Image 1 (cartoon, one colour):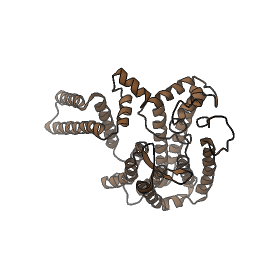
Image 2 (image 1 turned 135 degrees about the horizontal axis):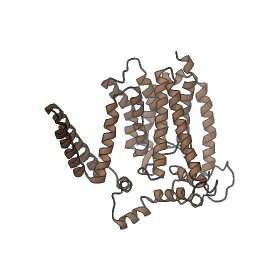
Image 3 (image 1 turned 135 degrees about the vertical axis):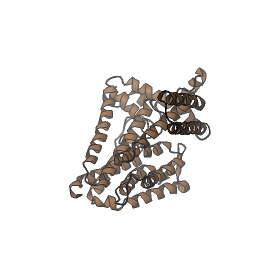
Image 4 (image 1 turned 30 degrees about the vertical axis):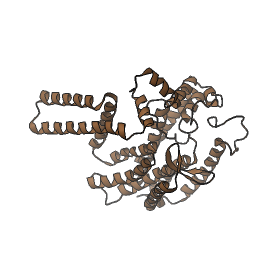
Length: 396
């Protein structure tokens, strides 16, 4: 409420204010909870494919009648409100992935089934990316934890980490420098351990592959990413050294982050109290009721309050994982891990962005950020799992 109130407070039910609308979203979420829990648990497994296909259709429809907000064509305009299908695609994809992996004919350790499962995740992610919503697209990458839990080889995860480190190093130091360093390391490794010719060919293949990845990352950064995306990554990696340009960037591209950090620092240890945050009341932080909501929490409740929020999120994620491990059916377990992964990615990116630990990416904080689509989608996501969990004794 404090993040969205402007002027004198009138009523919690003032529907002209975001907090009044959010209250309506909260009340409607209670109705959703009742509906979700009243349906038989098997319904969600039986109709997982229908939910998934429906979400794909709503994502495709955005290319024809979608409304553009902040550069992303991710909303349907429904008169007095907007609806963001990408939020609902997350729980639909989690259901579809759980349905596919738990199928008796699926063995996720087989490469063919791994590719099919990746397509299930990749289709909605690609559609969302084409709508210029990179933040929501990144959330789907979190489902790699589900694949890992269900038995994909460990080297897939190690490969992903290697590519990520290689990409960051390339942007920080340039592709040429990274490739030279890699070549020197691999040559020393080969000579020191006196590897055989067969091993040498493997090392040479790895070097060629790394060079290809490194130059591809550099090309994509310069030719695919938009200017504001390049600037955000550049600020994060401290690529810009020109003091004058840095000052100019602080006044535009990094303005939100600078103001967010000031609001967090101003909260001190115990905060300034509810509705008493000076930078929050002054509206210094743009989008502080959506993507930057954590800066409001930090200013009003300080280090103690913001730490409590972080602890609660960690406990929620751990609790979901614990309950997922206790499921008797693979469908429920996979879905539970998907829920935990999606919430974790939102939590990690949003708070990391607000604190400047990762590049600025527009993504809401679950159950905190303003927005009906996000609140409803997370309600559905979590309470479907609670319904599945309540039915686990009947899954033998």
